[in-house]
Length: 294
Image 1 (tube, rainbow, N blue to C red):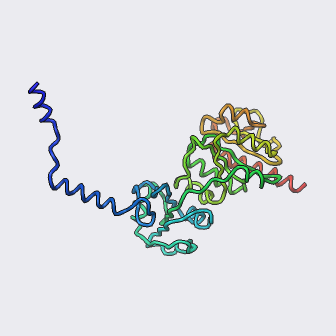
Image 2 (image 1 turned 120 degrees about the vertical axis):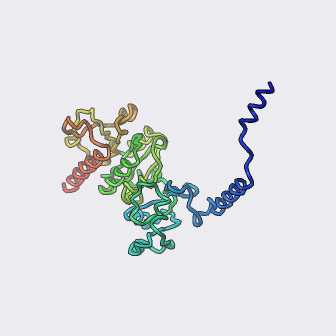
Image 3 (image 1 turned 90 degrees about the vertical axis):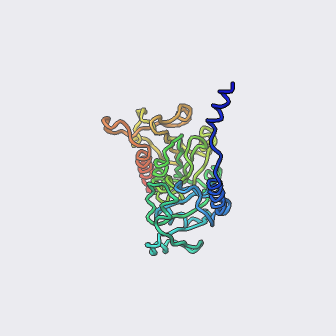
């Protein structure tokens, strides 16, 4: 028993010295200088691209310009590389511009962020209610439903294409979907601040709501024998896009009025979901243009 006690004592860590205790106190004091609740005084989680209290650092010229132009986007800080004063023209003077070394911007973003010398600290956008979209929908309104797409770059690319083809809104599920992060915003190249986002707690019920307001629900499914370009997509369309690889879930597929595919060279296998989305938006846009001429 005595041997065991001695062994335990030998394995104990030595007590902190006065110097180490002093260093710990200094570190705590330095950490307390920046208060998380005040977004104007600190950089939180260096290298994460996240600000305090759930705020997000957006970066890139197109992304920041769109956010600055969006009256519904709450902004806190605008950082511009001190070597790029010409970027000041992007600011609408709503917030003060801070000219900083490029290294400062590098330190708050992820290592692979191509920020082009500009970063903007913002609050996340609020989601749009589906009822409002339905009430304002017209004869050829198009909405997009994302069925558990998880790659933020794919979602960003879909948003960009949706904005290019005047899609009314993008519906994303509450679960299994990434947050509207800087990576997603950069991939969207400004579209995140240009197109309404609807958050759905239940995609099946969302589809039912759209059907009640005369939307035709069209699902992209590589296994379908019906070719998209030969399908009448005139009128109000809800286009459903499935997850990367897995495609549409069974219940979602069953809720669709039509399942269509985009025929491609079989050697390729399948298209990226964002590429398929862009092709589908183009097809629907052409049909709507033709219908408006008749």
